[in-house]
Image 1: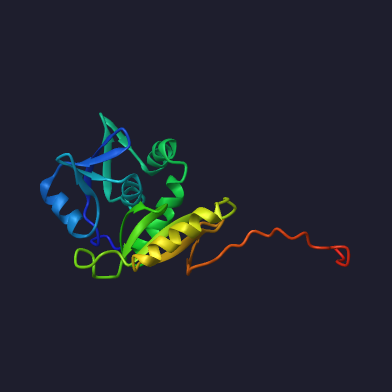
Image 2 (image 1 turned 90 degrees about the horizontal axis):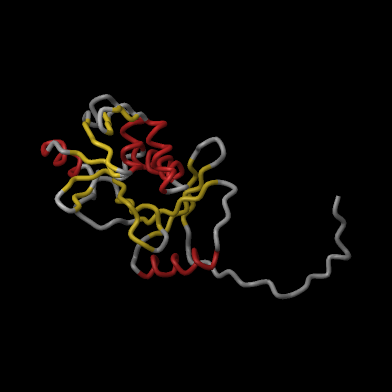
Length: 191
């Protein structure tokens, strides 16, 4: 991330919400697809705050105490055990040049916009995050994929490898059939 790509931001941590009070900064952030206005306040999501803290672009305070990246990860993880996974996917997508917003249902973690189309068109992709080794119910994922596909969106599964690398899988409609037959495994040799 280049030093002038994102502005230096001043924020205040209130619970797990990050409030940005500077109006000019709010407009800059909003135009690039960051944050949202809720109840008259401009807020960054925890994964957005971690992103800016990671790149040392956010001066975050809680009272008189300065909050750094590790502290924000800890605070966010208390509310959402997938906070670090979300940050890793968010950071990867942002570095690749995509505008990324919070998911809006169907179990999706993020809405991802085509490059240069944020604010002009709706999100093209809905991204589901999954840390390697974490179990997920396939039936739920299958239903969500069917609904997302009907809406004309592309479902993407983002898997975080143990080394922190993000690998993306485009998902198409999949039918998972319950295996009810007992397979005779007596002829197999297991070594």
